[in-house]
Image (cartoon, rainbow over all chains, first blue to last red; front, side):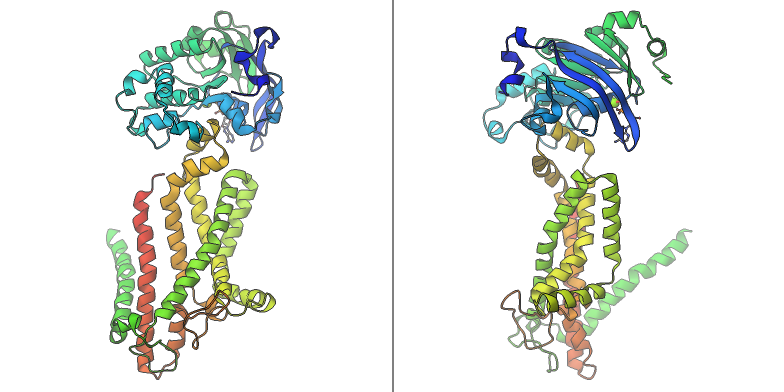
Length: 263
Length: 272
Ligand SMILES: Nc1ncnc2c1ncn2[C@@H]1O[C@H](COP(=O)(O)OP(=O)(O)O)[C@@H](O)[C@H]1O
Ligand SMILES: [Mg+2]
């Protein structure tokens, strides 16, 4: 599927470095405003990492750096020891390798089925994609709601459904890393639960970085938790631990009031 | 307040309407089928009722089509550069430049064209020279409408497509063109109308007033409706020539109106 040095699934575990995606001293300026400041963290080879922080902290910007939608950052981002700025197969290939689901769902003006297969190469789109569409929609917890109207325009879906369609669309490319930007922000509790179950299952085979506002969700997702504020990482730790026992004053404040004053 | 607005609005609507009616009224004597299908060709200085202005129509349309053909790829490149690669400063510079180009009087382009293309490059007074000059004149308008057509595509759509690993070319083909084709076509039609109505810059770079019917190549001069009207109108004493001038004006008006109305109609299909 990919080059051997990055095809993690077929590599014996023992040779693989524990940290799959490593971010070192990442900083970003947009229009002369510092947005990210000296960010360092890493994602293990599997499991969910949750990123929390007040809005405007730079969470979305961080995700955009990770798949090169922003490319003017300083520092280093490596995937399996390969710097993403030196990605052999090019930027487009890197973005197929990293699935990014944006905060605001962007549905293409096409049918639901076509939206799922949108990122596939032309040849693959022409083949029979029924099972692929089925699998991806199941994984995104959307199948039951749309199975009878796969050929209808996707714009008729509700925002929550559109967001799950975006997840299905990313999964169709079989990415090796998944980045989600507040994937459940506009979902009802039931679909929220389905997505979380789905994410936990996916996380058995790949690293997932999930941005969320929702502290309860951060608790449920378990794994590593990163707390970010004002372009900086304030605190990192195991999620239960950090939520119950925050070390930093800012974290405590955010957990109690959901606001943060980092200066 | 409403009454004042209506008072201003009424002349704004009535004046152009009166103009159009007057043009058709004056053109009446010359408006008949032989204006287009007649076997005689309308020539300045000759008794001209009942003669055909088909060569002039063809010349105008040829100039317009060739100008758009030249300007479109350039405008497309400018718009894509603006959308994908230009930094904020580049964008500002580009927009200022386009605005400045739009402010230059067409006759100045005609003069420059005369010096550069006709004399220096030895293209002579020709279809090619006229088209290139018209292309330069419509370039700011066309680029601007393409830039705006692309700017109206939601940023999220582009980002989502890029995130799926689509190349920039694929994003353009699969997202941008389907989303903005009606806006692109609207801009193109307006530019066509503009190219069709410019007279001064082609007056001494592309057209001659007689001796030419159909151009043999892009290096031969043409006749055009715009300039034909200009030449005919100078024949103050020849009442029939004046009628033909009005008829040519009416034809030109209909052509321009046609493109503008089509552009207006296309706005309905705006999907962005
Ligand atoms: N294109 C941009 N140009 C300049 N500043 C931006 C741009 N995009 C975002 N920002 C700023 O970056 C900061 C972080 O934004 P964002 O990453 O969206 O935060 P979050 O996702 O944590 O809410 C905000 O202060 C925002 O105003
Ligand atoms: Mg955000």
